[in-house]
Length: 491
Image (cartoon, helix red, strand yellow):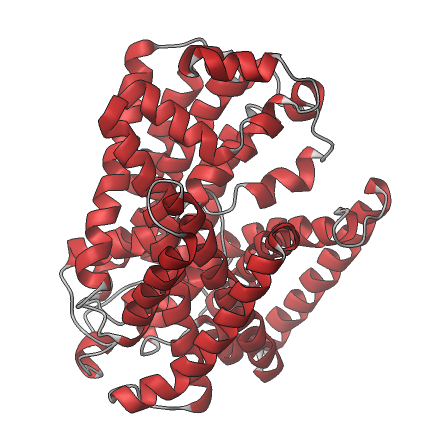
């Protein structure tokens, strides 16, 4: 429990102290924002600051800081350090800088910003990559919630149609009509769930693993996991520490802000809040798997079912959604079940809706199409929905196959994070500002994604030492190219 409390304090202090340092380096001012300068009543609309924060939080969160933190905590107390240091010095800086660059450049999306600072080739590659990611996320977050909801009431295909109809509304409607009204409510429910669970945990004060108990791979030692702590931990916990997916969502809120001075609360603050969500669920996961918590929260029949079989390990028997539902139901009773449902179902649905909307906006920027008319929005949305339906049909026919694809999506979000951090480093270096605050996490994330690419059995599956050497060589090459850019910039 001591590690949890120290980590919580560190995240809050990180926002109060380091967040101000990052803000001072960027230098927000009183210039006219895109929401005012390009107001169109559709995507560029001034919204209240608290509403922007709630939408940004839910857009970047979804189920990522819940499920990812639960699975990341399988590696042991090292997850605490990644959540705290990753969030304060990596993820929150990534979100703030990329969000503020979008705000500074008329609400440009990630691909356009990347092209502005890393060149047209990078822009074209990122247009394709981010479009693919947005549609994969959108399609994945149709079917999975439909499966859960159909287990409560109704037919699976009925829920697929309802969720997809909601996606059409969030993609086509003005941002203040559906997203602006629904998302803050879901965000508040998620925050309430986390605060309630954190309070119950503090009151119960269970014996929990602490960082001084060891930072090794507890998952391999105690749970039978085969993955190495590096780089798997840093891909598994993405949204709660560093995630490039956030850079695809921030432009939507950059187009709704009245002042640049809202940036620290909206971008840096939403990421710190997400880090707190991840911290709570990582702690609950440690309690569940390493402190025997599953025996305390599971009903007797579930305990008997697990002990009566030998084929599956603890982490195979209790997947992340089951852990969420079990803990919420046990600690928060009926009300907890409702909150668990919102966390498991509403969060991915809202993330999927935002992904399809982001895909429309990416296409609009790519082709230079204004989105003020329904016809223009429809022309860009139809191909997005068509691809989404195709992916959904494939997923329904190959449910296990999509699980493999989703591993690539998790890696892909971290690739986008590395690219975004390099882009921000180029911007800061060009402005003769402190580029080290983005360069160091850029170097680290580059090592993570390249090593994962080489060593992951779902990609190349190379031996660990060889993959680490190749990752280091590739990372060093990129560092040298950045250094050359710096030297040329001085001439």
